Figure 1 (cartoon, rainbow, N blue to C red):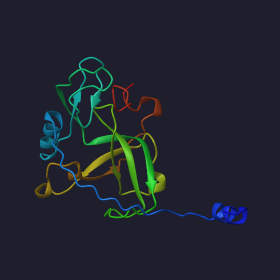
Figure 2 (cartoon, rainbow, N blue to C red):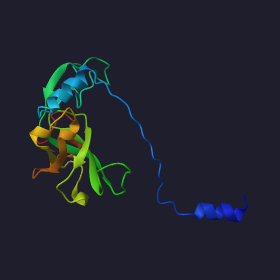
Figure 3 (cartoon, one colour):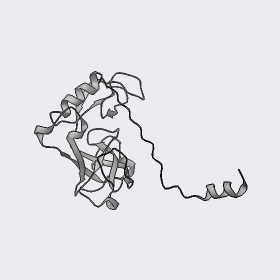
Figure 4 (spheres, rainbow, N blue to C red):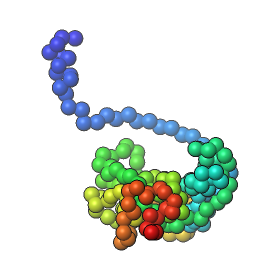
Length: 177
């Protein structure tokens, strides 16, 4: 390839690529995820506490990733959470029914200290911030199934922010003392 052609190719502006991927698979939930999903079907969020380090996992995994011990103590969680991190998605994802712009966040539920991913809505996207308090907005009960999409999204609350250094620490809300 000549230098001119190589330079021309390097100067091209690439705005995106399309990589259509189709992956079909069956997932068999283990005991901890199955229990979690059965609770979600009832409109209840739960986690599991590690008996050694006390971390509360959401969704439960059945063991602690840090300690390698079984997590069997179930912890009922609040519908409220704190934004640990987030991103504003501006580019459509082929095949995804959700249309941008939308906010995807790592949330730490009250009563837990390990984050999970969900959507934030009913807000100005650019005003979402780390430490912000949010609350789950559930689908109508008659639509609930065995899935986290029973929660449509989380919406901001009119509560004080949690200081960054307290997010994910026990006590979990960071509002005490």
